[in-house]
Length: 235
Image (cartoon, rainbow, N blue to C red; front, top):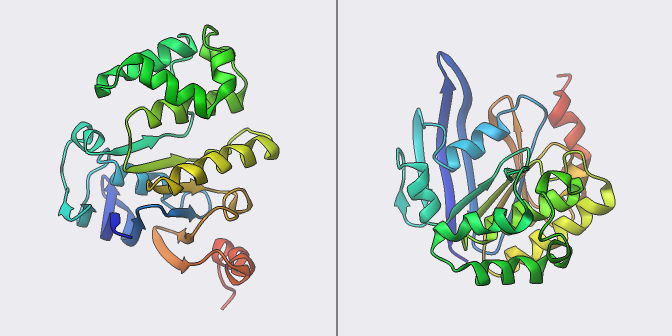
């Protein structure tokens, strides 16, 4: 399958402090890539760079077959890049239906957006007139995913989907994410807790201190290496 998102030698900084040191990462259509690593490794910055929210200091950001360094994040969103940030990115004071209504800026009619959301997440149909902030954490995350799908993304990026949720809920959400990938979407997931995502990932990359220290299939070898990669080798 074709590569939809690619980071080539990406460096990124906050002021004088470089946080990404030549990151190499790619995601193909229909593929789920898990980006793992300890706190402070640069995972969220990597997503921000990929979404055009944080500038590239050096290297090349590619979407499909073109370089998109410096492209406005709104233009990347229109081109099919969807980032669901940590904290879910919903409007807590609006109803579920009004949260979905706001996605009509994509050009899709309200009825179609609701049909997509409610068919994938039937519980949202039952909560349609409920204020989003009063939903459970899992339901809020479903709403965030439904809003993201309204953009008809080619690339879907998720930041800490599991945060604050029970393992059973996380498992159900990731089943939905795997189904989204099977429809040809390139999915990049940032997770601190590897066990939450490795069962659905096609590939995993471990980011440590702004560098990709490992990339490959999420097999038992990776799982065995994670503690060393997170904590550092004694040698």
